[in-house]
Length: 206
Image 1 (cartoon, rainbow, N blue to C red):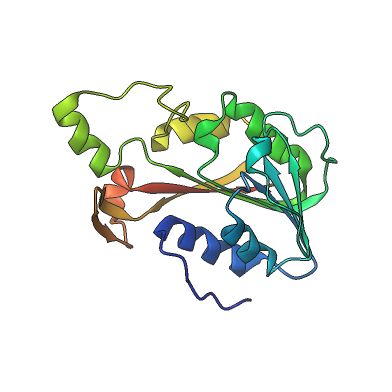
Image 2: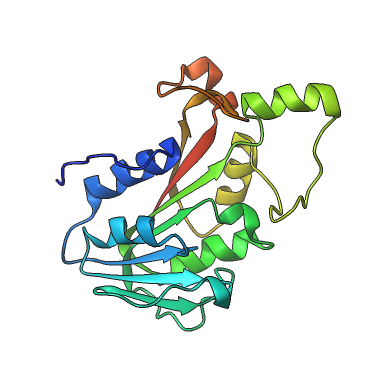
């Protein structure tokens, strides 16, 4: 098991990276969906054999480096990716941008090896800051900017139960208020408050 030393401020990314480093090894092939943040992609690549970075927007695609190869692709239809090839899939704050999220989840299933794992983070539709804001300005409707939707726990349960995955876990990540220079987040989420967490970490196992 690799020792985890967080060095990125974003708490949900730190949590994802902690989960990732606890299961990845240096012989595995990893695919990252939404790979336009060079610093984060390099962190993932440090712990695996090869990393493929998939980015939808051509202008956001970085230059290949060391054990990282980037390519343009659409999570809803990864036609250039072989079936049963990757050991791990990682995606941070991308699935809420995808029009057909069920297709994206089923493509994840297709390209993972048997026993493969996907780690996906996304914001919680019912996070405290969102509930607070909506109490003043009304409920946000989607699509909104680049977000096609955001998810409550029950939304994710419905999505995953309709997918090809039979083994999955939805974990609450942090609880509190953040934004506008304010960042008051507790790492531990009391079970009774799970549905108000800041983010979700979805763990899918093939």
